[in-house]
Every structure is written in C-alpha cells, then in structure tokens.
Image (tube, rainbow, N blue to C red; front, top):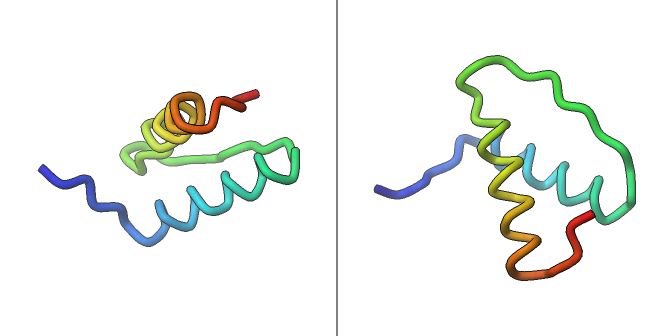
Length: 55
C-alpha cells in the first residue's frame, strides 16, 4: 500500500526539515488523524538511519 501524503503533510515535513536545519525549536498543535505523530517519528527515524545527526 503506497504511503501518499496530503499536501498539508508535505508542507509539515518541509517545515520540520527547515526547523532542524536552522536549529529552531518547534511546537506542533495538531488535531487527531492528521498524521503529525507518525510523520514526526518517520522523519526522525529517516534522519537517524540515513543522515546520523538526529538531535
């Protein structure tokens, strides 16, 4: 089953990447079933496995 993202989820991942690159702190106010928790965990695991610089 493909993991197709909604446009807001793609926007969230780009924002998260920008925050990490700039060293900014971030806070996410989210609703249920938006996928923010899964996306954040997947983002961190991806960085840990492929880039090795998760803080």
